[in-house]
Image (cartoon, rainbow over all chains, first blue to last red; front, side, top):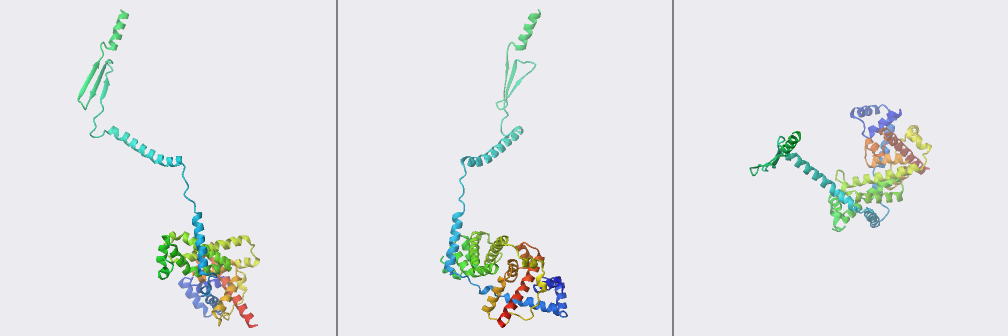
Length: 169
Length: 199
């Protein structure tokens, strides 16, 4: 009987073989005295061990043992590190980082929404400068329905022109 | 709640109370399972003093990890696994400190057990329980820790090969080989003890 067959026999005893292999081993046992003898030995050893631990008792009184366990628990709890004090700047940073992120999100939101125009809000007043007439300024307030035009007289360009004419002349 | 009041309470209720910090409930759990936990440590270590220390450590760890106990297994089984792991750690530490003998190397290779004659007569037949226990105790003490551990996990903890392999960090083939050697060696040792009686 080779080693592999011996281990297979043990697996059979332990119920570790698939059904087909287990019935194969069971059938072979009838004609194999060596295998049957080995199986008997393995079974006797297994049976002898049954119930071995049930007779083992702790060699100390229950109270004494508990007192040691209790002391162990107390030692453990005393040794557990207290939550360390966080330095002020570290705590501040912990607050500032999310606050900054929120502020950035808010600003980004405002910037993105602004061009689309917020409903109900009047457009800001316009100031126009006509390039052809650099001396004229127009102020339009849409909410008040007002338009104001400033004219500087004489216009700066006219002065320049007249000065130039004068010079040419 | 006093320890006396807890004596009729089931394990599950005691565990829930202990998880809330009730030390008296935990004391009752210790009282109920201390022998079983010690017995497992003793089977593995085969040293009474170490077994007491390790079972005590297991209870402290049990209290510490009580929040993790979800009740998939019984409380006793959960505690047993804690003490087994502590014993395995301790045995590994001890192994690192000693040199392996040539015999142990042979055992690993699966050579010795093949040469042992089959014990045809049951060497424990007719023995009283206490006498049987003593003989098994002596025989277990002569096994290497690897063989004893495989035997304990299989026979007492009722683990399957796959589970033992995972627990011990080895292959299933190694588990089968170690278990086979341990059983054969134990049979031979028990037979020797019987012969000594007859002489």
